[in-house]
Length: 579
Image (cartoon, rainbow, N blue to C red):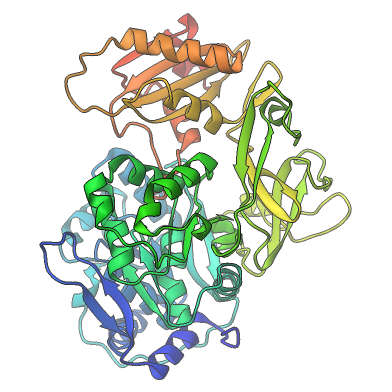
């Protein structure tokens, strides 16, 4: 599989080897709305060639092509057509009806200056208006399945270092960062996924993850095609409304490898009923990947226990670590292997120390994210660049074929994060900004460098604070915690309430409970608690909390709480602290 020079060559080979095989299996929005639709390799290749020929007639080779699709089938065709034509695909979320979503899309449009936009017929008017508001009203916007007749497609000259697509990372909506993923990066990471997870040729893989996100694109669309297998795709909206549909699809359609962030497994725990559980068959789920956000040992344990009657094996879990800057996977192991786990001293962890538990003191359980997959990992002191020994916590640095070429049109950030050198002269590393340690060859991720809360000289991991707050009340949904500046740094909490109507709760008492909980558990000064409506806390498409964006919104005074309790200097105007 590694003999191909680019992903286009690989796809042409797949279409020639098994033209009648299923490339895609598109599941309906609901059980009552039709049967699954299969798309053969022959049909997919024909559609891709037709669109690629038109892209070539528009001189799109080497240019950016924006992809905004709700149709999973059409997204797959448009993305592959860009690869066939030598254009640079730019997957973008199709829209969510929220202002920050439009801000993000606008930022990507301004960063890429696309030569044209491909979308669905139903979305075309809305996307055209969005482009006009961004100042790009002259950019052609066409439904990808209705482009005019064009000359036949011809295979372009594609080198291994040709940029295949730009993967925009999570972060501040106004300053998106487009990771330049080359054909070589893509092929190298596909090999790494195969070697780490033990994926089989012809396998059925898939799930519900959005295709504009790296985990959905690389892991659930492109990897099955790389294997010559079938990508089984469920709409993300269907999973959010009815989590059981994901688990039903795994049993009914023979999916052997599927994955999602931790929050998705937790959502299944909370929303799948006992009656629905009785109808599930998860015995064929060989590898259940958990990645995209911190993996919680408690979630893995509780999910395995709850769904064991449906045939789910605890050993199927494969906690993984990765990021868009490395194409996708950095570390992981196949689900047939025992999941390594460490229980460490929680207070020592705050000091970036990896210690065995002390009797009578708080502990934290951390699952291993597996050994390095197709790359090298170093744990480095972020201040000095010195590689620290195993069992010490530092920044995770990565080097390998999957590490991308850098950020689109951002030489400054590319220089800071790509091609880093350690203090002893090793070159070519990606600085991930994540914290972790290596223990017996396995990577344990402990937190994120830029999200770290430093209070009174202590390093608090925000996910620990957020997880503790979740225990205060059953009505608490997603939340986030971050530090705000001042004479002394203080912790601010933004916490959603699950209920959508009739807030007949004593919100002041709830806020007081949150403060008391954090004071008791972490001995920190809480600067403020904001109780907010569902949907206020921004999350990425993979479910990761966008803490830096939420902190920025707070400092700019742009969060509208149902109730808040803030220190006096904060309540007089958080925007004053932005300096």
